[in-house]
Image 1 (spheres, rainbow, N blue to C red):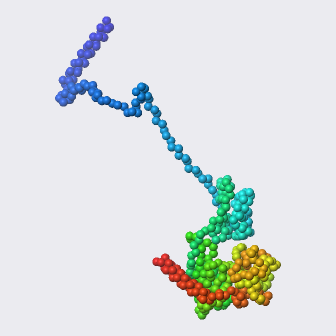
Image 2 (cartoon, helix red, strand yellow):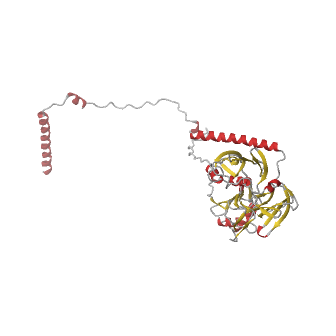
Image 3 (tube, rainbow, N blue to C red):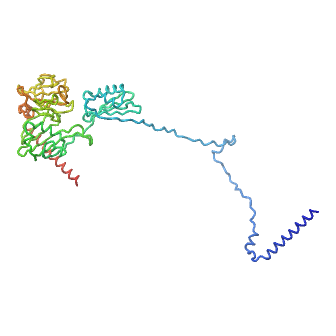
Length: 457
């Protein structure tokens, strides 16, 4: 009974729905456009089966196996890595360097650098095989290059004239001497004296140490304190050893002219290392002179002075030239060696007799050549010792005396030594050297002037 009622209700509801849809279609205000109505009737064409072309596809040879073998799987790609060696990294090094101070030894300097005693002994033996360590002096430089663990890798000793002694640590200890190959360059300059020779040279940019050379050469002929009133002209020509822009050693005078107005003094130095120079007055040869110590500073003159050690006033019987220990000392005139040995406060001494009445004394020497003997004949410019501080001395210097008939005289003013000095046997050759020096000076001064003017422009 209930089922019938439900079915009857469903039929009635469906009839009402159909009736409602029909009425809504009739009552619609706008009819459906024909294009849209036609589109609703479109259906896609049925898909056709794809056509497979009859190609003879041959797989690559790499994919084929032998005819008797079935297909094999492809091998996996293998990554190939190039065996490239990594660069070796050098361990960092530590560089330590400083100059040797007065009174220091090589061992003390190396200890200050942190080198152990066994290594210091090895270094001293290695350096000593190439250089006399007794000649070490202030200004020489030690450079130590060490590894991170403190062990030395290389030690270098820089001495005079750009020479270096190098010790390298490795499987064996190797030592070598490195010498520069300098070029000799000639310079020229002109200076006007206003207050002193030293100040004039310094103002003109000329090595002021040449004032000592001129004082030694002309000290017995020109009174620099009284005869120089100002306005005098100096023209100098000198040589320097150059390694690039670096000067090696000390400059050396080649020519100097001092114009006093009424008199002209000229000096020509040779380039043979003998130290002998010829002095000219107004173009005529005056004498040949050899300096006892080249380029040294005149630190004390002849006469009464306060003694630097004892403090009292006493007579200074010679002149002192302050120079570095080991600097060569040369005979100032030809003669015969009369004494080699020690004399109290003079320390180590060499005395040379020049005839029967004149004697020169060279004191405070550090050493004397083994080949020098008493009674031996020497010439002006021959080396007879090295600067030292033996005897009563406050520092390295040469005490130089001239004695006439046993009495001290001023070495810079006594004419007897000048007469004993070796005179150039051929004045013609000496005058030719003077002419060559004058010509070279004029050329260099002109060149320096042109270069300076160009730089200013």
